[in-house]
Structure formats: C-alpha cells, structure tokens
Image: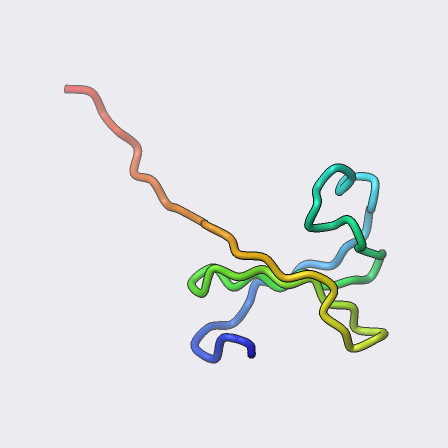
Amino acid sequence: MLPQDEQPTIATVTDLAKLQGQPFFANAQVGDKVLIYSRAGKVILYRPGENKIIELAPINISTTTPQTSP
C-alpha cells in the first residue's frame, strides 16, 4: 500500500556501477524507479516493465539544525 498523504520523490536507475555495494540496489536494473516517501519513511525500488516491486526498505531522513557556539 502506497502512502496516500504524500507525493514521492522519484529517481530512475541509470548507472548500476554507482550503486555497487549497496544492498538495496543488489537486484536493480537500468530503468528501475526509486520512489522515496520521506514522511512515511519508505523507499521502494520498482520495475515498471514488469509492474513489480523489487525492493522495499525503511529510511530515516533526519533534519538537523546547525549548532552555533556562544
């Protein structure tokens, strides 16, 4: 079930060499889509040609405020 309350950030896999060593992309192919739902904390690797989810993982995107010294 996709989160209904946010639009994902979408990226397309174009260079597998840059993704080597990252377990999430172990089964990725060129043309796969990465859907990032930051508020829901989910990232999905989707293969449009097969209409199939290849991988799903939780993400933790934290925003930090820079600290200033007195």
